Image 1 (cartoon, rainbow, N blue to C red):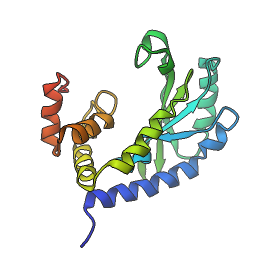
Image 2: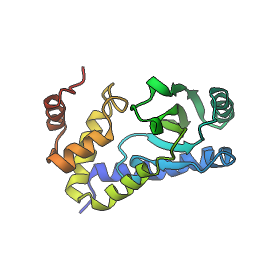
Image 3: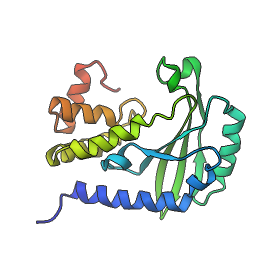
Image 4: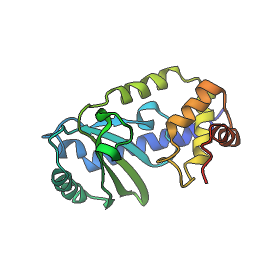
Length: 199
């Protein structure tokens, strides 16, 4: 019996992600700052599109000019065709907790004719190692049926303009694991019930 197409694609993306990371060698580039930590679906084994989450604890003294210097070095890496920068400190932080202040640097990479989005988060006050730990735990506790449901929903919803910045993987994991959602339309209804239906 052959594997489900979503599982085959997930495994292929996982392998491709490893090749992309090896080619960019960002870990060496930032070695003087700190260890580069993978997070998100590359850790949980729930990839459905070409997106990688990477984190780096840069410390509170890391300034915007330091981010720009890092971006200058990143843009010289082979395949890097786009960079964005967002200063998410103070009132612009994702939450009202100081530990969540960060610089956000989405990177666009072309690899073997495909476009990858690499979400690089530069944490200022806390390394947020709880995030990859949570995804590692998720990879161990998710059932085969739940894994397919997550990949099925992600396969549809990752094409929505609100994904991943307004509606993300964690929303899907919560809906599937905690509320028994198993289809893309059910996920849309789940969001609507919570007043989060995207436009």
